[in-house]
Image (cartoon, rainbow, N blue to C red; front, side, top):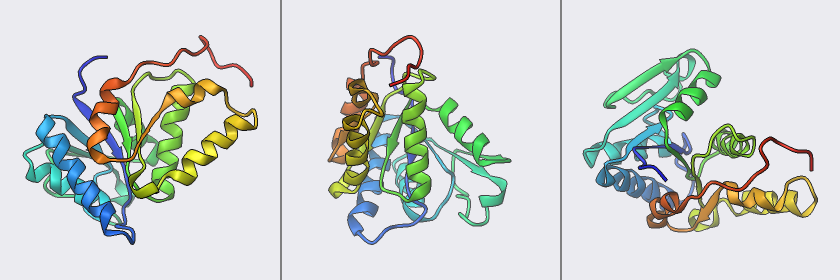
Length: 194
């Protein structure tokens, strides 16, 4: 696959209860900076988003945040980014994050992170992109999601090939290797009914 120059990271605007999530976000921000990969994310300076961005900045990395005008105050837009893009809606935020990224990674997060992760996998299923998607199952955080996706396959609502649309890794140091292992799935030319 082509070189990965930027990674969109979905993660929580809260820290969560487990200190490990904060440590993982910081470690991944530094990993991206050290690899010379631009971080594209939601633009906030709170929660795991802020930890991730701060670590990437501290490591000398380029960081682009994309935040809707109405969330600028709620998520306390980060003021030390390489680039902060203010948009008018969540739809525009998602579109810009998608367009600016060569790959996608889901760290622990809440309903917004879940929404973004499912959407980007679905877009791959619909052949709207062929970019790699990695779910970091840190401490088993995303196990319920992975089980649910398996359940949809077992019950005939997704094909066996659906599993090839994303990768799941358990350790932060395995994320970049997983992104580079990516191979586009063999899917029909257009979506079919199950």
